[in-house]
Image (tube, rainbow, N blue to C red):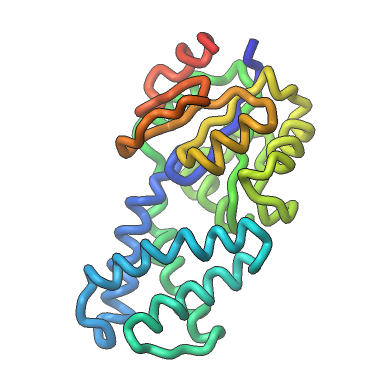
Length: 230
């Protein structure tokens, strides 16, 4: 029987993609349009730069603050613009302010969380602790969760099973009685599966289903009923 359900944040509960699109466009218009003529090209470079820097962070090669500054330096360098690390970090924080102003949960999230009142609910997310907790607070869903574990808090990121184990310990939960819900197959589903948890793979943008997930979902509609089948 499932007793605990733990969620990822971005792409699962909070519409990170939409917030990024809106925030990035505003940031470009206010800070870069005079230096970089083509927003479309800038957007492509920005999006493609996420994976390599985030992978380096997950492996412990750089801090989250270094990820931000170095990523901005790299993106600007692609357009022939040189900035010191401190200058690039300042620009990244400018982008963050626009990004945060567009935080919103997906339409199915609140109803889903309300329907899960009989379960212990938790969060596991990679990233900056303050920023991830602010997402939960600003979108009004922080009160649903008894435990929130962010990779920066413990120095270990998904998919390492340690972050899943520490969260289960904090919740007093056993892995085989717990489900992890996430949209990143490698970080979320593979990681939680390695920790002995049940998994629900959320494919909001048409990703192919997983062959190891306990559930493959297109959205969170009726999730309270689906989790009973695991």
